[in-house]
Length: 376
Ligand code: GN1
Ligand code: MG
Image 1 (cartoon, rainbow, N blue to C red):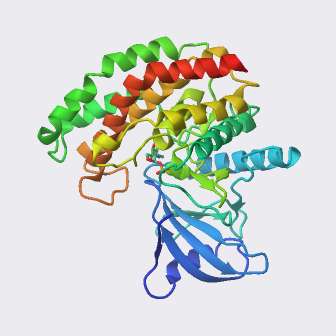
Image 2: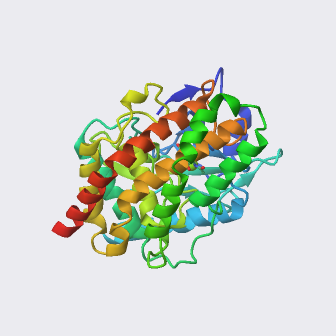
């Protein structure tokens, strides 16, 4: 995790905000954490007997328009997971859950004078994020942790969670959003990338056909994470997955969305914004280890129809992510935070390359998924 020190002494505005929450002890340091494309995150070190530190987040309320519902989901999910983990102590790879810190008035968020929304979690100590996996065992543990996450939430009633972003993984809707951005060409970036856009749209019919065949009425909608990329997993020093973070989009969807996004974001050979496209593809060894882990922790509840969709999820979500980055680039970088010039274009091209590779690797991935579930 890339931690940037706030310049000079502590930013008093942030201290005032965190003081609205029920935190223990005196704030010693507040540092910005430069990860995540949506919210703004800080680590808060505090002096107290229990050695508890905190995560302070400014919620992106352009992306999340109903903070009440967002917070309600987070509390519902974290309480549910904490309770289930405590009932089965010791049996999970996934050992911890986020813990919401309430304001002094008992709310899960705080609105400051400027209208911005803030929230606080307890920091899960001695954990880190990983940018690229270094071995198969990590991949296997990620698969197990993701499957456990699905299992832990599998008894939530379908109405328990609000849709924090409607049509979030509705790929057809994302295609329409791209076409809208092409029509508007708001910041004039279209001509320079028309070749890329033609390439993306050349796969539209194939994706639509896949969606029709795969995600039919018999596939149940379940509570899933919807954003299980590598950066949203916390590891301890022995490379165990301790916790899935960033529950903002945890809501109902298909298991294959999460399977696909975890492979897109973790079982690959490069970062999400790799410029050298030769370095980008699915690492099949990692994919296999991940699949075995996922299979072990989902075998008790996954339906055969859902197993059939898992590898398709890799193609689908990688295609969708490609579209989302191109759309934001055409719109002038209004959704994702960027750190580099043309960052969304770099990300989009890298995801397009990964999609093309995943498309070629699909038959092998699908075969391996089916074999893994057939063995158990
Ligand atoms: C965003 O917040 P973060 O960085 O974990 C995005 C995901 C994308 C991801 C791509 C709410 O996730 O959907 O897959 O970037 N989150 C939202 O890295 O749009
Ligand atoms: Mg997020």
